[in-house]
Length: 58
Image 1 (tube, rainbow, N blue to C red):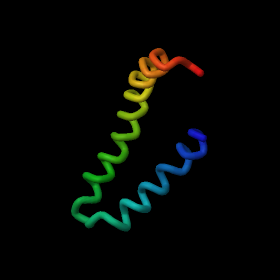
Image 2: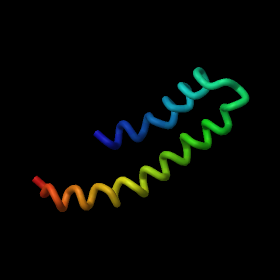
Image 3: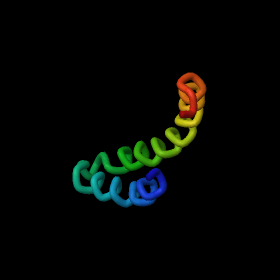
């Protein structure tokens, strides 16, 4: 499920950003969206590992 969602996110988020953000704030919003992708990719494994270890794999 993660793969298909990851594939369509950039296009969908940019369309929503273009439609709902004022023109003068679009570049800042675009930068935040793009940096959130990288931040989440770094943070989730670090947060998920202790949760999985604590709750068990199954």
